[in-house]
Length: 397
Image (cartoon, rainbow, N blue to C red):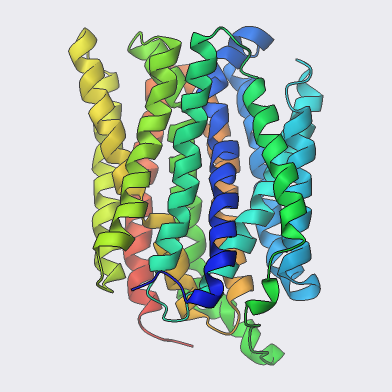
């Protein structure tokens, strides 16, 4: 069975390609972080602030993008997001000064947030059967980019070329997408049914509305937190080379990629609740294991064990985000853009708050302690996802 209907395949493929480069743009900072710290002389705290700027832009954009889609449509909303990405990616790291980089990374975050919401919304409109396979497969594209980006960074390192090149490459690709966006058949997407204001206000009283928010807040915070600091974790704790450390970021996202591509292809069932529960459990156990290994001493063998936990953490993380979005969209079929936008805003806030927590804890207690914080939040994420499954299936609205 096809992922989406034939009439949507061109648009779906375009979204898939766009999401690949979104994945690259969101995770490459983790792969280049050791070089950024060395070349620009930034501290953990300064790096955390710069990373947080992107997260602020992201969560603000995801919140307002839902209303933006309702007011100007998905086509113009998507184009505005791509334009912000082009500007931010072409200017980021053009100077070592902190303030300009905060601004440029903020713009990158705004663009990412807009595209994240637009693609999620568009995909739910194309998934007419509501199986969730289209959403899982779409987020596999994100994982492709998340794997490829750090690999390119590793290649640049071996060639002794500047890590800044990766930002310019991604920025150039978004210029192509800006032009392509003008030609995409957005008119195929069915508009949401209008509801009266009384019905819409019931969203805030629905348990699933808030659990979707908190589930993505915790998940994105853990996912991007692990990814952004992975290279530095292996570089400083396990004595890995910069190339090996960068590869660990790719390994994490490779695990996510295997899950997001493999599950929609090989699993034809519709028990999304079981998938979300098992995935959350695997992610939690793996993050805890990765943290514990950081406190031990074992040289090369310990590094291998940690690498295995990285891959398993990625595999466990695979379907959490897209499945949470699927549950939220199914709970609010007539107001999907706003409901999905609110849930995605939770993810944006998580990606904003967690870098501050990580940088603060790492600066005072070490980076392993920072990963310990992520292990705790991964437990909270698992609990929130389980509660979301129950709330969304009650059909309270």
